[in-house]
Image (cartoon, rainbow, N blue to C red; front, side, top):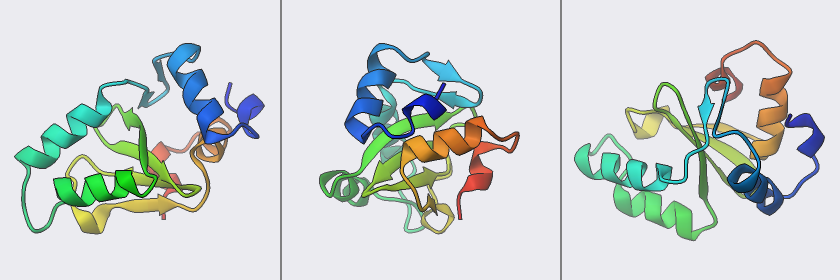
Length: 121
């Protein structure tokens, strides 16, 4: 399903996810209100150890985009051709990066039996 789209731009992938893709696949959910859910969680879990609303908004303003959520409640986003894994705990030290675009992560995941979080450094 994703391998056919491996050369699509992020905009093309987003359009496809919003109009034609299933709303969930394997352990990923593609839901439009995830940005609201993450912002609400950031406000509720305010701590020096966790990602702040200001830091998240800065990430968004610098080109970051939230793309999916795992069935475990972790978030996945992309910024500047790198894919970010934000654990449901939102602890800053636990945020991990996959050094390739989101669609390439999806292709690697589709061809693997490993859990999605195992792809992140």
